Length: 285
Ligand SMILES: Nc1ncnc2c1ncn2[C@@H]1O[C@H](COP(=O)(O)OP(=O)(O)OP(=O)(O)O)[C@@H](O)[C@H]1O
Ligand SMILES: [Mg+2]
Image (cartoon, rainbow, N blue to C red; front, side):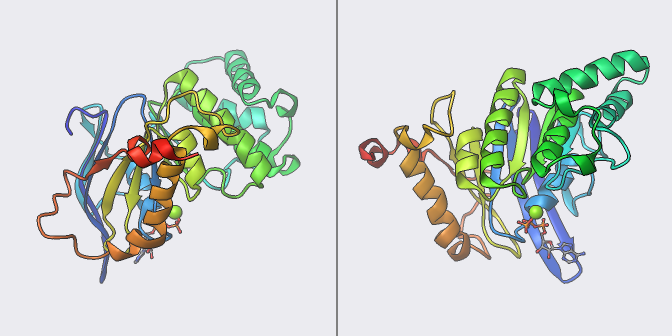
């Protein structure tokens, strides 16, 4: 796994009297989009915070591009569930501030220009002068996306970035993120509860069992070809097998596989499955 761009090596998170997860291993390749799916409380946000450098693991380490993570870095931008914008700054200033942290020597005019360009990419050119309180939830989340992508991070980390939005806005933003990430060949790690969102965006989907002592039980390889579109996803051969597999995991196996691993379980070699390529999938409508 050492050759992966991001290598998660045996991380654990323990609190006095409670183990959230233990001995978690996985890799993320350069340009890959990895989603993690699992029930509430299994430790997804904790994993993301460790990848972001916001939280230290109780054991193990995370290696990014050959270097162990020691704290937060502008190389790893986070998009949170809430927008986390600075309320006293306009949209442009919020993006500009992140840019000024990234490019310390840039003059004001250049920062402004780059911030504008980032807002244009997410369709917000009209809202540049508005403050967060004057923007809708979807627009605020868009500013967050513009801010994260503007600093050209080596890795994009997203914790349920669309879960607070209405279905229509969520869909539009999913399509936008898919487009932006593909354009930049962006390495990304995202938590979601939305199975279709994972299928639309991910190259691989990590399935975690229920906590406490959650495990990474399976890695689902999403072999549906790109480009994928939300509107036609359900008609792609293999889509139903993939979706059923993940739902079945969430409904049943996340619970039945929870707790101690089976005999001979090797956390470094989590099975990788390709349900969309299974023969049953080819017969699906
Ligand atoms: N200070 C603490 N002491 C004990 N347990 C804690 C503490 N902080 C967090 N936890 C536990 O860590 C577990 C993982 O939390 P985390 O936020 O990572 O879950 P999650 O998978 O992101 O859940 P959700 O889907 O609800 O966002 C939870 O079960 C929580 O109770
Ligand atoms: Mg969470």
